[in-house]
Length: 527
Image (cartoon, rainbow, N blue to C red):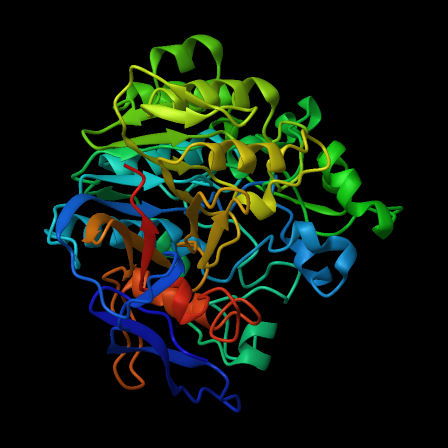
């Protein structure tokens, strides 16, 4: 496959590392960066192959799906991974990743990288802000949110929970061998025996150590995702589950009597049932308590606002507007409180969105097709949300993605929709066949799964009435293995392990195609 790319370099599959009798495990290597592909899908008769930046408008960073994880929480159901091949459990996968204890170190490495970028690669403009589009944490827990805010704002990150030291499924003596156990001897688990994952004694001890995070040196905007709202991004937090989250019983097997055909429905409505099977005792921790949408907003606001307003604090909403000189950023809340991983949006938010779009237009097309003149100045509009168009299909919430798309297409200044959720790079044109108005939908991959990247986004004038949206993928500064030596850098090891996870790493669809990565997206300038 074509490896994913970065600003000036890209990482891809390197030499096979022979460990024991297996030769499947591969290192990550550094390659030359991919060129930018010009996409003319929405450029009318234009068929450019090269574009020059005549006037920069704004440059931002885009990060999404960081998944700061309490890897020792009793309310994580890692044993479900045993049923990964069963489609009846699809929405619950993945419950555990071999590299997840290193997530905070990969995030810290990406923060360092974004801080080091003095100028965007296409326009030379400084990064004005960083947009985060949800799933900052993994399991709607307070201690996860505190660590996330420390990573982005600067502060002490404490990955450990419960008693001092790691206490989870990657322990050598944990009663299951489907998890990578780095302290075990070669062949101690499925990952080592079948996939060639290396032993790494002492890794978990190192991963649980507290550290001082640098924090982003630029303003950043927050966004609510499904993993902030519901257990493992799927299950409603019932009183029974909330009690189990801070308790001492950690389940290690499916409960007897579970009907696999109803597994998803049961997890959505009664996730605590998954705690009723065989279990082991772990150290309880009150800091694992579940958070609410209100607390999510309050902690963001209190640590620097990050887009949220006094109105959000007052009414408990998580959608807002952030204005710059030339661009209006509109952040939506697409999380379904009724459970499930996919998104939804309700009529009150759609009504609010319509008013905010009107404020960024000197004229717009009304619902009946007529043109409405306003007293507002024109401003480009960038929409931010966790879910994209295709994943706004939650059966437990409002089915209104067509209304949302139609609304955005009525307003010609909407040029870009940034989102995440699917943990993959993807770029899609969205056009209205009636009048030709269109915008670009850009989805960026996750930091928790391969290719573990962020994206730089630049808006600039491209001449001849064209607006350009430049997209450049960014790798963090984690080390890359040289030769067959051990890799001690935790962020670099996180990326290498993620790359070797079956169906989610080197061999997966997540990096996208070249046209989903380094691109220049052309669109007619709306004003």
